[in-house]
Image (cartoon, rainbow, N blue to C red; front, side, top):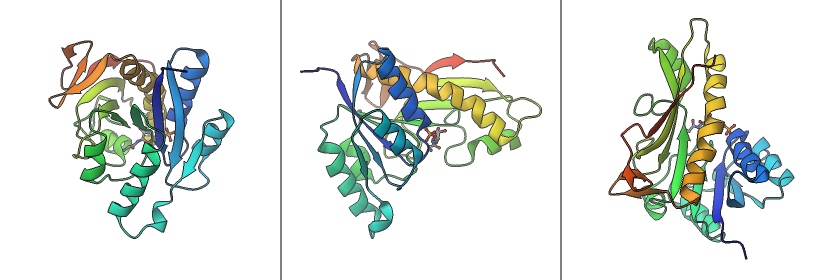
Length: 219
Ligand code: GAR
């Protein structure tokens, strides 16, 4: 029997971050068992990626529920049927109820395309350009009841260049997403990463508010 950490991944779209995890598992770099991929939207490319990698998939369409609470409850039931050690939000575009975040507190990670606490919410790349930021990036964080507000685990910083538009900048950030998400998941799976008293702790050391920092000056 495998004693690898069981991970359930939630997606709403293309699943490129899911793919980075699949690639990590297939190369032997990432010692996890991808137990299931669950999408709240039908026909998304991420579901195809999971099927191709022989990972069980589930669709739970939020549009078939009358309210957020009943959707989140059904989602919890589905997730828990796979008995995960860790839940990974990989482009899962839903606001979560406090009941849901509390249930997975300390065992659910999210990736958000900004240097949190800057630019919580949507359209982060355009907002970083409009604000004249010299740098932008991405954050992996534990999920708490506060939207995009849980303790950071790891951040990657990239430069904002003169001719960037939102899609060029998004691509630069996404290359870093695919580096830092597998890294954070690996730390958790190895038992090196915990959330203790509302802080991220790596190998027994509390991390700074920005999390572990990685910089990339690659254009
Ligand atoms: C990623 O860029 C992720 O940072 C973002 O959605 C994208 C999903 O891409 N997440 C959020 O905006 C969460 N607030 P993917 O489906 O190709 O992994």
